[in-house]
Length: 133
Ligand SMILES: [Cu+2]
Image (cartoon, rainbow, N blue to C red):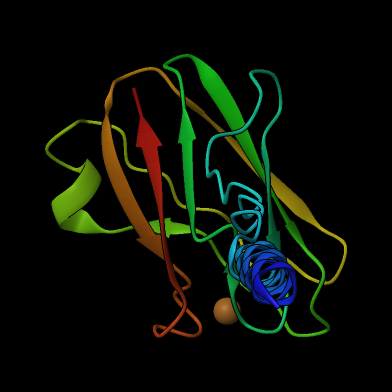
């Protein structure tokens, strides 16, 4: 009889341990994978801002000084790239593109650090920013 009790206890103990392991196995999960960095910086060289669906993409591009940024219009509608007055006039670096038809591009070299908000003069709701470091 004592032997049976002992075995009973042993089996309970094993069951408890097993359950603990199962619970631990269920609750201990690997942390979610780090989402891909939504970096706005681009490699030095010729960063390109795509104009598509009436928006600049990326909306913010960060480049080191001396970088030439190129905009390419992939919309059927024409767009312009015009620096906002408050952002760039004070910095002495106004940029204003001609109207870009589909497939046309415009480039501007940023020599001075600063924040350069810009817009499309045809569609004023289209806004974006170039940050020069
Ligand atoms: Cu536009």
